[in-house]
Length: 88
Image (cartoon, rainbow, N blue to C red; front, side, top):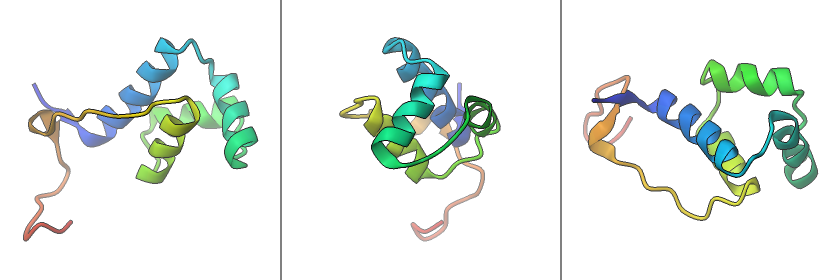
């Protein structure tokens, strides 16, 4: 089974929030308090559900909820584009 990279990131944020019992409102408050990122809960949900975010946002979310390490199984991720010569 393979998963698109965008789906993996979205699912990872949601699963880490759920494991830590962090609501969307709490996530938005943390983003604002710790990093100055102002998002309303609906905007956050839209961003996550559309997978419309950069890697930076993914890591910011992981940081503020206390994720210390992330294991990614590369052979299960489906990339949108073929990577040639090691560059995207």
